[in-house]
Image 1 (cartoon, rainbow, N blue to C red):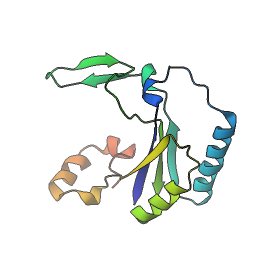
Image 2: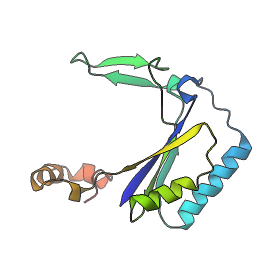
Image 3: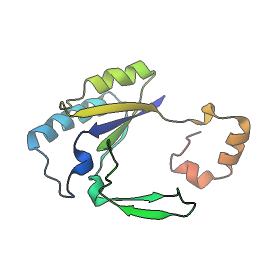
Amino acid sequence: MRYMMLMIPKGYESAGPELDLPADAVDKMMKYNEELRSAGILEALEGLHPPSAGARVSFASGEPVVIDGPFIEAKEVLGGFWIIDVPTLQDAIDWAKRCPGSPNETIEIRKIQEMDDFSDEVREVVQAYPDVLEKGIGKP
């Protein structure tokens, strides 16, 4: 089963667009990332720039409305993610607990939707888009 581990760093919601990460923290995180890779469970990982360097598109009014970052109402934002392939949620939790996160960081773990999670009707619809499936969305 694939799980996404979402890094939520407190304070990132109001961080400026510049990146100035402490090298020692990056080194610890890279060692952790290497552990995931060496264990053969790492499928993907990425860090994200702060929301101040991004935008949101809201459809609340029925039409798309663009809101430039930072987002005043945001209490928690993503700082990055890992996708790991492990047998159980408990395995994902155990790996998340090994992360060298700082006291201001939280990791949320979410199971990634797989084709087996859906009805036959939904699977038929998704199968009509093989080029999208090829990119990994809803891996059959």
